[in-house]
Length: 77
Length: 140
Figure (cartoon, rainbow over the protein chains, first blue to last red):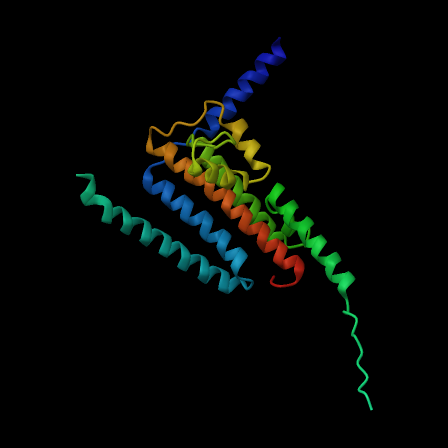
């Protein structure tokens, strides 16, 4: 009985832990960062090339994301 | 005098088919457990990055209560979403077990979560394909 209650509370704690509350910008930055790093590691071999590729991809992700956001702004009013 | 023609035996064909089979196993492993395809080829950095990328995207996507599609889709978009979500391999069931309250796409968070989950799947398929090509010796 006690062990099942502790298991339930542990499960509830885990659920609370994964409840993610992000703003639009935070979601965009996390997405861009994770995908840029992953693409950099898959697409390039040399560390220097990887860093350059990651930074460039991250910058483009953010610019395009914010740019499309502003482009859609007039339609939201 | 008639020219002598010889039929050349394809060299190294058994090795090629064996390599192809091995590459297929590597791709399958990479799909089931993100990063395993690269780990089997001792590409530790790429293996870790693939695992972490898919893991973070699934965790955030499920945490935002994104829609995790199932096989009983109503239209083609649901079916495509299911294929994309299945791309996460074993993480599909992890996401399903994490999303105890089910999806909530009535808010923007849930909609973003759906994209995170789909991206995790598509990225994992891309990583498995990369591992397959590396195992065939085409790229590394």
